[in-house]
Length: 127
Image (tube, rainbow, N blue to C red):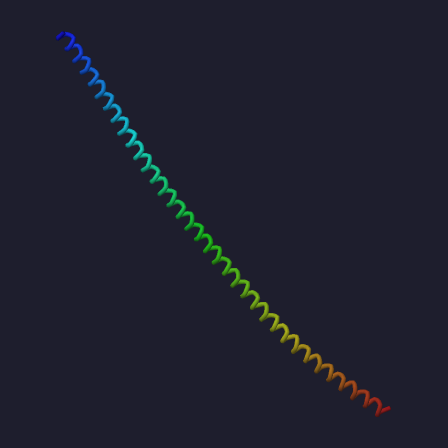
C-alpha cells in the first residue's frame, strides 16, 4: 500500500507540477498579450500624434499658400488700380490738349473768317 500511496503521491506531484507549468504558461501568455497590447496602443498613440502633426503642418501650409495668394491678389489689384489711375491721368491730359487744340483752331477759324470778311469788304469797296 505504501507503494500505491507513493505512486499516487508521485502522480499528484506530477499533476501539481503540470498544473503549475500550465499556470505559468497561461500567466506568461497573458503578460505577453498585455505587453503586446500596451505596445500596440502606444504605437497607435504615436501614429495618431504623427498624423495630428502632419495635419497641423498641412493646415499651416494651406494657410501660408492662401496668404500668399491673397497678397498676390492685393498686389495685382494695386497694380491694376495704378494702371487705371495713370490711364485716367493720360486721358485727362489728352483731353486738355485736345481742348487747347480745339480752342486754337477755333481762334484760327475766327481769324481766317475775319480776314476773309475784311478781304471781301475791301474787294467790294474797291470794285
